[in-house]
Structure formats: C-alpha cells, structure tokens
Image (cartoon, rainbow, N blue to C red; front, side, top):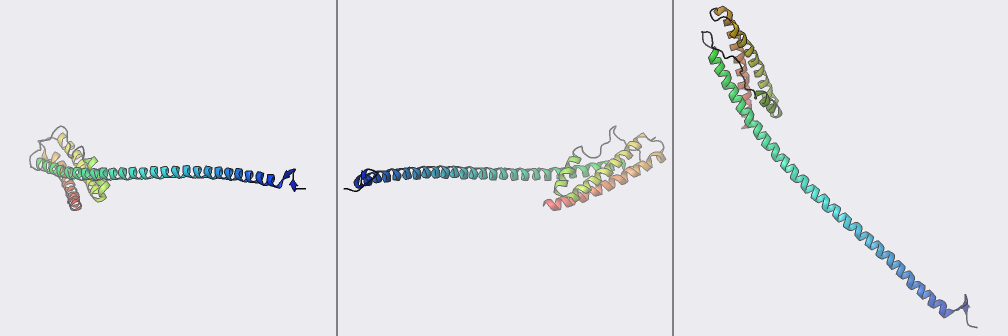
Length: 195
C-alpha cells in the first residue's frame, strides 16, 4: 500500500507543501515590499524635514544678517545724532553765556530754552553706547535747567536795580559754565570713542 498521510499520497503532500512554500514566499515578499515602501516613505519624510530645517537655518541666518545691518545702521545713526546734539548744545550754551555775560541787563526772550528739545533723546542713545557720556549729558541737562530757572527769575527782576538781578545773572552764568564743562567732557569722550 502506498504511503499516505491525511488521505493523500506522498507526492500530493509534497505538491501541497511546495504550493504552501510558494505562497509563504509571496507573503514574505509582500511584507518585505511593504516594509521597504514604509522605510522609503520615512526616508523621504526625513529628507523633507532636513530640507525644511536647512531652509529655516538659511532664513534665520539671513534674518540675523539683516538685524546686524539694522543694528549697525542704528548705531551709526545714534553716533551721528549724539555728535550733532553735543555740538549744538555746546554752541547754544556758549551763545547764552555771551548773551548774559555783559554788565548790562540782558535782553531775554519770552521762552527760555537752553538745550534743544531732542537732547534727552540723544542722551538716551548715548546711554546705549557709553554710560559715562550719557551721565555727563544728563548732568549738563540738569545744570542747563537750573540756568533756565535762574534766567526766568532774572527776567522778572527790575533792570533799573542791578542788585536785584545781578545775583541771578551770576548763578545762571555759573550753571551754564558747569553745563558747558559737562558737555565738553562728554564730547571729548564721545569723539575719542568714535574715532
């Protein structure tokens, strides 16, 4: 009797086993193809992320470059503004010293303003670059303010009575001289630093 297993001959069992092996190979091949496709998709996604990261890095570098240029431009503008304001302030203080320096009662305008209106902004800009310059500018501003107060009081005094206005003239002159000194110190340091 020929050998049989499960009611099938050995040849039939071998044939079914071969078919099963072929099917198993096809299933394994399909699984490998799926995993290869999935790995390729992940690799593509990784490449896209790397490309996006590279592009972001390039954009960040360009932005940083633009910011540096803007900072350099702002610094140049600040240097020019402070330089100009120091020159104008010194010139203005010297003009006021000449105006009130005579022995006669000085002719004063209705509104007394010694330092330019933009001087406080220039002081802030100077502070961002050199605090000592800004401190001297701030001190000059205080002394100029005191001189303005002295000159406003002087304007209310009687010109015919020198003893009534001479002391205010002297105080204003003293405060203006101190303001001029502080401005000169600031200007000298500023010019030394910017050269």
